[in-house]
Amino acid sequence: MKKHIITLPGDGIGPEIMNSAHELLKAVGEKYNHEFTVESKDIGGIAIDKHNDPLPAETIEACESADAILLGAVGGPKWADSKIRPEQGLLKIRKQFNLFANLRPVTIFDSLEASSPLKQHVVRGSDLMIVRELTGGLYFGQPSERRDGGQSVVDTLTYTYGEIERIVRTAFDTAMSRRKHLTSVDKANVLESSRMWREIVNKVSSEYPEVTVEHELVDAAAMKLITNPSYFDVIVTENLFGDILSDEASVITGSLGVLPSASLSDKGLGLFEPIHGSAPDIAGENKANPIGMMLSVGMMLKYSFGLHEESAAIEKAVNQVLADGFKTGDLQIDRAVTLSTTEMTEKIISVL
Ligand SMILES: NC(=O)C1=CN([C@@H]2O[C@H](COP(=O)(O)OP(=O)(O)OC[C@H]3O[C@@H](n4cnc5c(N)ncnc54)[C@H](O)[C@@H]3O)[C@@H](O)[C@H]2O)C=CC1
Ligand SMILES: CC(C)CC(=O)C(=O)O
Ligand SMILES: [Mg+2]
Image 1 (cartoon, rainbow, N blue to C red):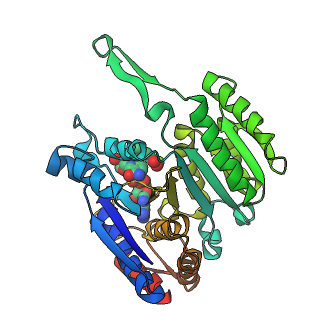
Image 2: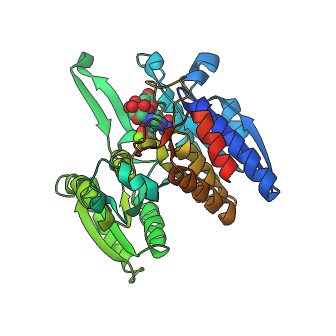
Image 3: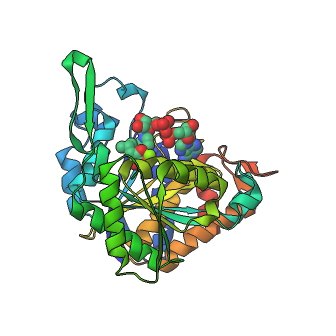
């Protein structure tokens, strides 16, 4: 198979973990006889520095002709007070390519069960998928501005019926391919947008009689995610709630550094990135956990290219390396050896 991939390393630890993705693609290509060509483009803070634009036209053009996109992370303290923010590049690329469905699987590798700060019996058997709406809600609503000379501020939460319906359908389809249990998370006791969200979930549910559906308020769902994570199969929720709940869910797995994600459109192009940010506190130290990025490559192989065997092999290699007693600094596994980003990458590839 021949595929052309645009990589967007971005800022902070982004370039470090993207090197891991490049190495992994080279290894998978050689082992399974695929030709993956990779071209790197700018996004985020580095793109502001070089082009005064967090998502330059050149990057968009390259992505338009790509088979898939890999992203590291954007942002950092360097641009904290800048008028143009690196994160705008990420929001813009999601909107540009209509990447409305953000799949965030929360899977616990056997050897990480003990590394979770939660009690083992609580996390055992947890395996859930967060389906997060990615191109609407508060992150995109207009107006979003300071008013009255800085004395007030407005952010806007808008969703169209169609935007909610399509993500809800994605969630039902996802549930059908899993344990057929869907939890829709909202704040319907307060927000009108959530009440419309509930109505749409109830309407679509009549087309999926095999799926058990329930509604949870986001505050209670946040609590249950930590006290009883194995209760959940598929969670569907809007943009902001999904962003927060997925970082929270990473605690179950032992580290934010191990969770991948897929951002999909209905037009075929997908963007794949770890769920974490640019981790400025450890950037440049060769300490970042590359697993979330490497599993995102696995999601790309599966969702964009249909390469299920190759994707499963990456997951298996990660599991094996952890079980063999190797980890990165963010993980706590008893008696395991701590590796750098590059060492962990090499280890996973050698097992693959
Ligand atoms: N998709 C993206 O590009 C995202 C970008 N950001 C941006 O990243 C910047 C930093 O945000 P933070 O709030 O610090 O969140 P963060 O996710 O970058 O880091 C939170 C904590 O997790 C640790 N961490 C994250 N990824 C890790 C990895 N792979 N290995 C080991 N430890 C890891 C960090 O060291 C830090 O202590 C901000 O500018 C933010 O806007 C935040 C989230 C997503
Ligand atoms: C950086 C934000 C734009 C988004 C975010 O935190 C995320 O998608 O996980
Ligand atoms: Mg986030």
